[in-house]
Image 1 (cartoon, rainbow, N blue to C red):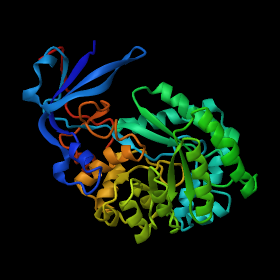
Image 2 (cartoon, helix red, strand yellow; image 1 turned 180 degrees about the vertical axis):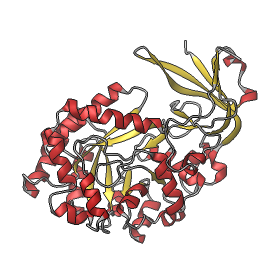
Image 3 (cartoon, one colour; image 1 turned 180 degrees about the horizontal axis):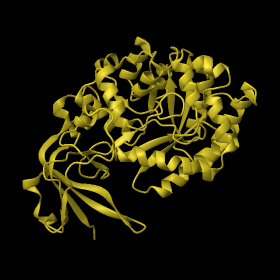
Image 4 (cartoon, one colour; image 1 turned 135 degrees about the vertical axis):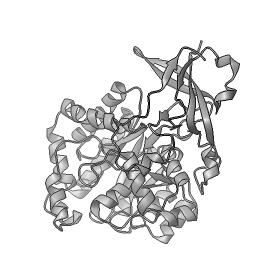
Length: 424
């Protein structure tokens, strides 16, 4: 028999139900599904000795909770804390070793990302450190990063490989992600294979492409180490033709696909992502009008990473053009060791509000439903509706927008503690 729990007297519950109806496009304030003095009833499940939220059973006002839940354990939020769908960080590079703080200093001194990479820095520097690290060491480094991300209200996170650039090291990174899934049952961790992040220095271009398509991808699919394959298509990295070759091989093996698209230069890779019905096209700093139109007329989500543009002092992606054209837009951290060393999704939301001109409803959709859609998880996550995963986040604030109004807030900050009772 299911065991139920109730969150009661939330200052506001934002269900996001209207966002789902619109499939994340052209969202407005009314689509947030705002319930003042709200309540959420959810079932629970066991994970070892722990009891975790399972499914949303009912959502509504606190004075209309069905009698069948009258004996359920209640957590009273005293109208001081808001409840929203669990945040989804749909683009991170969380598993790596090494440090590139010296490169940050170089960039602050005027060196470009491309100039640093040409000297053997950038991705290749992290690859060397990651190859040298053991699975145990990589897991040890990843654990506090994952905990920090979760402390901001993230309940679902995508983690990419990409700092191995060899069959052995890429599979090692994916094995670390598999370990993290077992260690953190309260989180949904989505694994993406990004062997096509760069080209290794110890292999020729064509040789590595064959390794990707004929060695790595078949092993990843057979061992179920990833749900998706991503490719970095850009100047100095993978061409459109190479990217399509890799993505087609991945699809044939049953993997979903994504694209690092139009970040450093315009390659029309966003259009390729749309043409291939990719889950998402990410970055998009240099996307063309043609690419915008393609995304607006496809199921592919435009994932914007404003923390990266901020960190690189680059022009931001044309968010308003994408939104006004009708594209589904998500926002993510792009946490990585070189171009955005930030695990705070709320801080990235602040940048999206200030520099991308995104509204409250657009930001909300961008870190909930649309971010879940960018992982193909929108049928389970991204809204608080009956039947959905109970991945709710209880905020330390009375209103959702305080998450990004309070710039760079510390996760340790909490509102007055809620009270818990066995029943009403």
